[in-house]
Image (cartoon, rainbow, N blue to C red):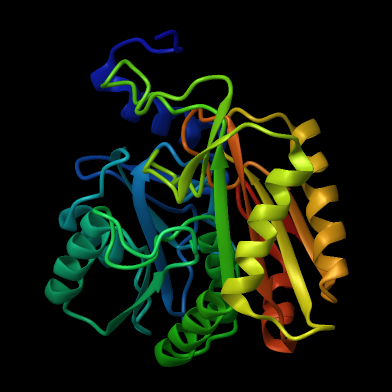
Length: 329
């Protein structure tokens, strides 16, 4: 294993410290327990908090700021944050309108966020993201996994919260966006967790893992490697079968890198997917290409679509200013 590491036990704190220094105008790092918050606490709004295992950067800390998250709780690599992190973050950022947790559907994340929610002394609710249609059941989740579609949920809910909307309204939008979003990832290589020192799974140069999870969990099947158009067609077909969108529906198309795939290839994937969705009668009116929900150093990509309506489109388009996502004012 060759990585830029000093000591394996220090990688998380050193990475978080570098992130906080690089984005000192936007975020503040809190240690023992570890969590990050907006530099300037927002007032008179529902506090939006997310988190999960590290290794998926820029998810979640990269989305702290105006129009998205108020706080993020990073666990160790591919490990859930603990309830004390979530409690400390909630107590720091709540603004008397309640707290909304956005949680990816993994057993550890769900359990620990539920424990924190039970201990909070103020109103709270949870949006569970479950956009991965590749695997219905696995040992990591109860049902579908939360993957790159989480970014869309966080953006839209964060936008709504900035308007002063109440907790129930913010949760309802998060649940709606999640229900209209579907993703599948494909891996060409495994990822390597620093503490393990070796790839999570073995895969040779003539194979790919279709439907891989963002922690290296097995997908739908191990398949022979083939050309990009054939790979993308399988992904698009699965997403269309999952959402069953009406023709002429407007969509947001997100092509997400898993950590080690160059932008040249991600844009090639986007080009192939865009043609197929257009052939299916869908209108791509919003798009995003890049590394937004990664799996450390995995070579691979995921495709996500969200079925838009006027409300979702409005909140996707609204101004956002975070380390990893920014547009508008």
